[in-house]
Every structure is written in structure tokens, then in C-alpha cells.
Length: 353
Image 1 (cartoon, rainbow, N blue to C red):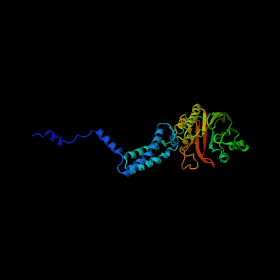
Image 2 (image 1 turned 45 degrees about the vertical axis):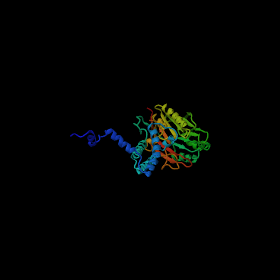
Image 3 (image 1 turned 30 degrees about the horizontal axis):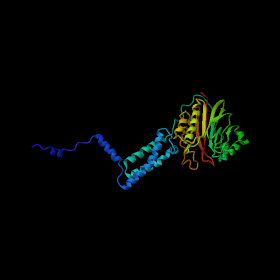
Image 4 (image 1 turned 180 degrees about the vertical axis):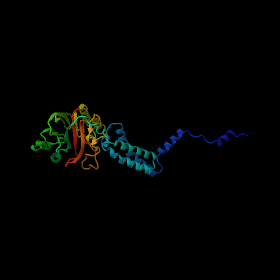
């Protein structure tokens, strides 16, 4: 006698779930919050640091600086490893598989973006070396480091100097007979202690109209061994809360200036208030200028704040140069009474193509 339908249904094994359904089930189990009160608390505590790091890394990947507080956090991008590792430890404690994967992906992205941006020095120019130049860039913090600057000028004897935050004391000191003897050519713009800037040169200068900005960014053309070198001071406003658009706009003016120089020897030096992790600064580099610190292998050496540098800080002071100016060395100098470290670059000036 054949078994009834009910008997057949009771003896038949249930059908195997489709493979796709099985994969979805495994994913759902991985994403499921961990069991136990302590584990759930650890998982919830892991979310804020991982989410914060992910937002900043997402903006970095999207090539945008976003809105406050993203631009401020982007400046410290390598230090995102701290909240990421905290999130990983909490996810491990919670036995939260999805949280562990999330943290590992964020750590890998941070490591990837920590790499130096832009290409190192390209092919060496075909022309001969016309001159060897030493360039100094220093932010004096409202003129407080004027004495340190004067000592550095006597000791290091740079050929071209870019000074930011040069107050009245600074301007008076740079106009003294002793300084004039060594640097007979200058372009000094005075203003409030933060606004003043200056260009000093051992070579003849022709001063031009600088970039229109909140803080003075003067411009000059130096004649070195018969060759013109365009020198532009950089000092855009910092990306403070409520001032990100202004910061972005002033960096955009620096980019427009750099893009308009073509093959001419060009140098943009100063306090950019930006790091390689800011899209607005990378757009300046994308015009073809190279960061001297990057070329010499020091792209992550901090210049601000000097109180904690070089152990902790960010590099916001840069000397950017065009192809016919080839950096050989870059050194970071500590000056008293300023929150910035000075940057001293030795480079070769090649004949124009």
C-alpha cells in the first residue's frame, strides 16, 4: 500500500535553500548586534569613532573638503588611526564581525591616503643649472619671532625669503641697515600683525600686484643670473568654522595664479593653512607645482603647531616650485615665539627651456 500524501510530506526532507538566500542569511548574522548587554554596549561605543573617521575618509576619497568639522579633521588625517583602532578594539571586545571589518577597511583607507600626494621630481630639465638658491619661508606669529628670523638670516644666508605675519616691529627690523646690506631688494606689505607679509631677496626684484586676500600675499619677480623667477607669498585664511568658504576661495586664487604661469620659473612659498589631505591644496599642486618637502622625502614632517612638532602636528607650510626649480634638500627650523616651524629649501635653478 502506498503511503498517503500526509505520510510522504512527513518523511520528505525540506528543500535546500538557494545559495543566494544562504549568503544573505550569513550576512544578516554578521551584521546582527552581538548578544549580551556588555557586548551591545561595546558595539554601540565603537560606532561614533568609526563613523567620524568614515565621514572624513569619505570626503577625502570624494576629493572634497566638505563642511566644518571635516576640513579641520582632514588636516590631521593620519591621526584618524587613533579612533579607528579604538573602534576596532571595541568591535573585537563586542565580538561584532561587521564592526571589525568596518574598522579594518577604515584603517586600510587611512594608510592609503597617508601616502605622499603627487609625483616626486620628474625628469631632470635638459638645460644647465643657472644658479643654486636657498629659500626660507617663516610665519612669525604676529611678529613674535622677528629676532629668530634675523638670527636665521645671518646663519643660513638664504637668497629668497617669504615672511608671513610680519608686524610693525618686523617691518622696521627688515628695513634696518644691517638687513638692507644683505637683502637690498624687498617687497614689504604692512597691516595688522597677522596681515603683514614680506619678500626679501639678494637678487633684483620687480614688485607686482599680489593676490587679493584677507592677509597680505605679495608677489615679485626676481632676476637671477638673467633668468626671471616669479615669487609669490602664500597666506590664505585658515579653515576656521564659518570661514571655510573664504579659505577655499583664497586657495583657489593661488591655484589660478599658479596655473597661469605656464613654463616660467615659479615659486609659491608660505603658510598655506592646508595639508596634502585638503582638496583645495591638492588643486594647487595639480597645476604642475611640486612640493619641495615631498620631493625631498619629508612630506609629512609637521610645521604646526611648533609646541608639539615634530612629534605631533601637521605640515601646512610649503615651498611649491615649478619644473625649472629642483629641490635638493628641505630642512625645518625651530624659531622662538612662533607657533610655526620655518622651512629652508636648497634648490637648483635650471635655464628656461
